[in-house]
Length: 440
Image 1 (cartoon, helix red, strand yellow):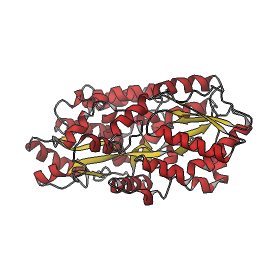
Image 2: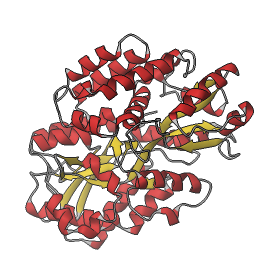
Image 3: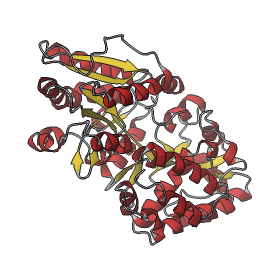
Image 4: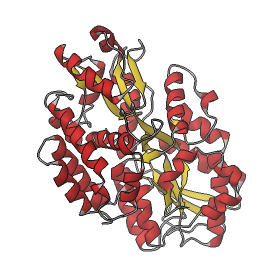
């Protein structure tokens, strides 16, 4: 299961996510090299459910309302898109509108002068910016300027727990990190893994580091890493966080053999809904997996969720969250002035209208757009409301580290995290290695 791709909450959740990752290439519009009919614009994005139909619907709505400045949309499989967009942008032949994940990828485009600075445009169009959750702008911002407009959905990481297991053991959900430490031996004594973790997949382990560092020190430490500050990982809070992580492993906080458990097979999810694990730190897309694969577990009220609790004495704001604060659209700096204006009109109208909001909610997502709560109905209503509250109430919504960093630094990060959890690398060795790839 690739967490980067939005997952519907419906019973077809698993299938939907798989299609997002490897769906059909979509319509075969001609590759226009970043241009369209005079005054029009081009738009590339991902194919597959549930996102492609909603993206197509947005293009169709815009074209119906603007027949003289139409948008030509083209949709690609996930991996094919990443390869094509990199090559095309580098050759100055990308689309007018570039869909992406923000963070490190966006920063590389900014550094190469390949995307437009949207800061002044958003300032002049404050009504547009005000429709979007403020916390979603972080991953679209580089050096204090906005280069990508947040679109589509928010996907924070939350702490899931099995209510029935908690009742069985006679304990309450943790309110602080200290509570978590107290719960670990109690669950172990009953033969229940305190936490499920798909350690083989590496990025699942990363979520622990992200929250632990944030709760311990706030968002500033990783902000310095992202900004390329030399030796930023040497902050004492990082060593403290890494030590805490290894202490959790030594306490048997995770199931036996966690380092060979893979997220792609949803084995970590199964441990939670079958009651073999009490808790699991995971993305909000997990709800759909639990509902699709867990029988009556979700329907019978067995699944609980919360934001990660504060660390006693920590400096981080307990409202902060991490994950995917949105998906992002940038405008190519190589596009014609007319195409750029068409793109901005698309941003200011269709992508923030009520139909856009309703489309994502219907698919089971929490839009980046404000005031979506009234649309949350049915069995998922409370979950969607809570996810929306976490996203909108976050003082800082940090992007997942492996997306925020460059591909080179991200791969080193993931390898080091795996070694940390397997006790193959000391905290100081981890820090030294990560300092070596800052800015690369």
